[in-house]
Length: 249
Image (cartoon, rainbow, N blue to C red; front, side, top):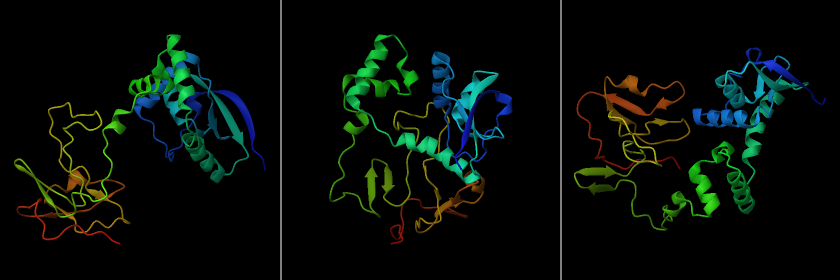
């Protein structure tokens, strides 16, 4: 059975977001959608089922609420099974991501938009990306990423001496996020933990658990992840291990 569609203007209060929508929308992205709606209008309707539950367009719905719009254009889709609605929810987001760009035409089009005085960030590109595209520059991230050597210098179990610090090479990602990381430093006075990854998933065998002092269990609670840690009394040597981390083959 083919689906049937109906275009309608609905009150935002009538629409219900899907609580199991796996697509996430950052505040920045919702702001970009908001800017687009303010510039050209609400030209991309929200897809809903006959019960007015949103199938696709959660970001547009959030932007409309941020703009305090009373109504929004919707397309009501009838005749889909629950599984087909879920498939459409995923496909509406994922299939668009599978497309590419003709960089010469993109550069030309962005230049035309810039000549008209429009805010280029309304296209969804950041100013850094726009500078790279318009000026045909090399992406700074790519420029500074060295090629992976055929024979790695560091192997599991190595200890690197960095001044007064010791860094062990193992299965745990250790990073001080007060430092620059893709342009996002900690700009507060609050120190942050050095261990940036302490959780695991059941199919990834990471060897022995990481040791932490008893009384810190609450810091590692997470509704979806299992903490790969053991809480003990007494001092803990986080640097020296009697063997390297072992991975399942």
